[in-house]
Length: 240
Image 1 (cartoon, one colour):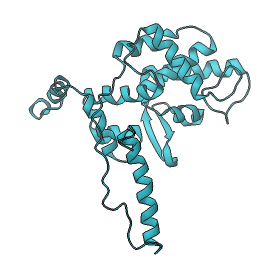
Image 2 (image 1 turned 90 degrees about the horizontal axis):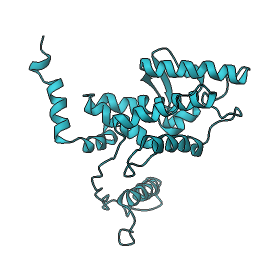
Image 3 (image 1 turned 120 degrees about the vertical axis):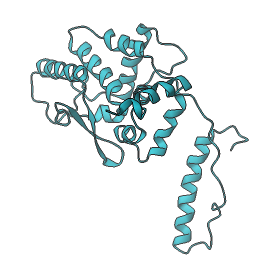
C-alpha cells in the first residue's frame, strides 16, 4: 500500500482493523496465532497544521453583522466553532437545552459528555440568535436542533461549510489554509496552547480519548511560542 501511494495514516487505520480482527480469531481459537502481531505501524510524518489567524477569526465572525435570522445564526455558529472547538457533528446536533449560562454540554463521540466554557462574547451571540430563532419561527422548537435552516430543518454539513467559506473569502483568508469546520477546531487548540493551556485540559475540552491524540497540536507551535508560554507559566513568575 505504501508503494501504491497510500498515506501512512490510511494504512495504519486499516492495520488497526486487521489486528483487531485477527486478535478476535486467536482469542476464539479459530487460528493459532495472529499474523499481524509483528507488523508495526507506519511512522507518521510531522505535519504543520495551518490555522486561521486571530484577525481571520474576527473578520470571519464580523462578516455576518446583519439583523436577519440567517446573519445572526451564522455569526453565532462561527463564534461557537472558534470559541469551543466543537466538532461539526456536535454543532449540528446541538439542542437549546444543552446551552447554559457559563457552559455548554456537548455529546461527543461514543455518547461521551463533556462541558465547554462559554465566553461573554459567545454567550451574547447565542442569546441573540436564540431570540431571533424564536421570533423567526414563532413556534415551540424545544426538541429540534439549535441551529436551523431558514425552513426550520437541520443544517447539513455542506451548508455549514459554505457559510464558513463565504466568510473566509470575504476576510481574505490565505489560500494555504484549508477552510473547514475542522480547521476552526485546530485553530481553537492551537491558540489555547499558545495562551498556556495544559495538554490535559485541552484534551478534555476537545473530547479526545487520550492526551496522545491532542499532542499533535503541539507541533504547530514555534520556538518563539514556547518561550512566550514558558514566561507566563514560569515558577518564579507565579510565586506570590
